[in-house]
Image (tube, rainbow, N blue to C red; front, side, top):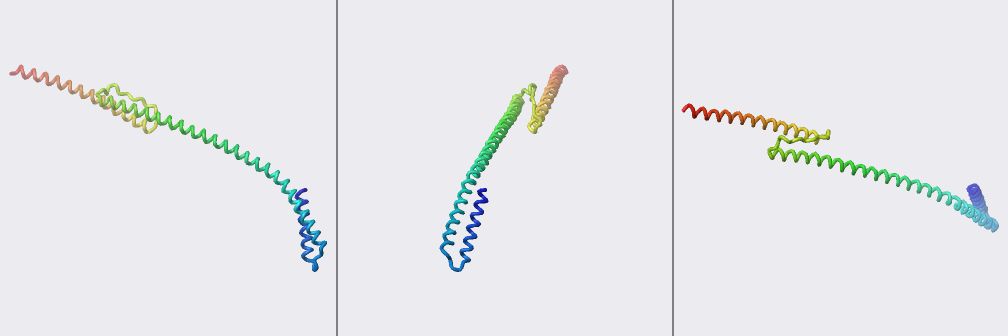
Length: 171
């Protein structure tokens, strides 16, 4: 209704203005009618503005509230994702550090000559776990070779000790 009244008042004003411009000698009463109709059109436009501005303010407030809720949800979801990434990163770092510490301890024992007690627990299936298993295989092979070398050395000593005794008795 307010829109219809505003449009009707504007149409009436434009009709009067057109008639006044088309009239050959302008008359004073037509000017007064034009003034009245323009005032009426402006009053109707003002009423329309008052009605629509309130409705548009409510609509804008509703949209702003909706966007604020969405922003809050996005911030919460993003925060949860960031915390999850941090948690996973810390877990990954701790797992890598534990595996590297095991490798370091095993290599120190190997360098110290205690290859018999080198045992590395592998609980990962990634590349670092594969390296750790290879290191464990290398340590086992080194232990086996060390035992074999000690046995060979022992046999050689026995032979050399027996040979020295044999040389003494033959002279």
